[in-house]
Amino acid sequence: MRFLEGVNSTFSMEARLNFKHHIATAFALAAILFSGVALAEESEERVVKEAIALFRVFGVMHPKVARESVPRCFYAARWGSGSIPEGLSRKYFGIKALAGLTAEHPSGFYEVKKIFDPESQQPDAFCTEEEDKEKLKAWREVFENKTKSLDKREIENSPYSPYFARLEYTFPVFDTSFRKAAFIEDVEVRQFRRWPDGKVTPLPLELTLTVVTFEKRKGVWREIERLILGQT
Image (cartoon, rainbow, N blue to C red; front, side, top):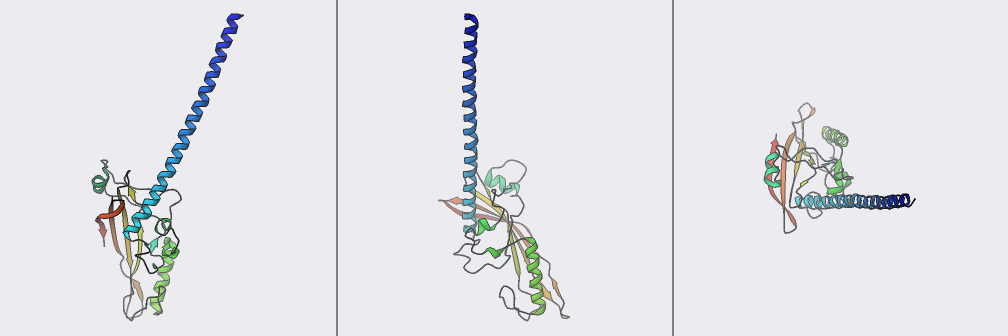
């Protein structure tokens, strides 16, 4: 009996120790999980903060640079796709893989205006592709009818319309210490021509694809290189 009591007592002790071990492990795992979530959230906040600062240095939507209202649909509403070329990835980010770098926007920041215009001062500057097509169609009709432009530019008695530009950007790539950054700028310029018979047709698109690289010096982002990837 004493032997059985001793065995039961030992089992009981082991059960209690195992229970305490499982509880401690559960709390430890929970701490790691919540710590990971907190770190992820903190990292996203830093990325958003640095992206806003980066584009403001670049001159996008900066209140001291863009004093006048930006034309409607001047910027794409969503981030573009594309990767930083392999050569630049090696040069500035130390990537040795045979591939370029691509950044994903933080969750909840798929709209460009949240980075370019966080104060929401000029929401009409951002348009989807569908909205851009609608504006371009309306702009063409204005030029055909020789009426006043929708963006308040006068329609001159010329066979060529004023330029209509649209800019698209990729979300920036940052290094782990937030000392290097790069993004791709895609500039698309459209124009119409009015022929002697009155017919209006679009001219070939003018496209410029550029990688812009930055370095942080004394806490301030500074542009250090531009590389044109393609141009028409």
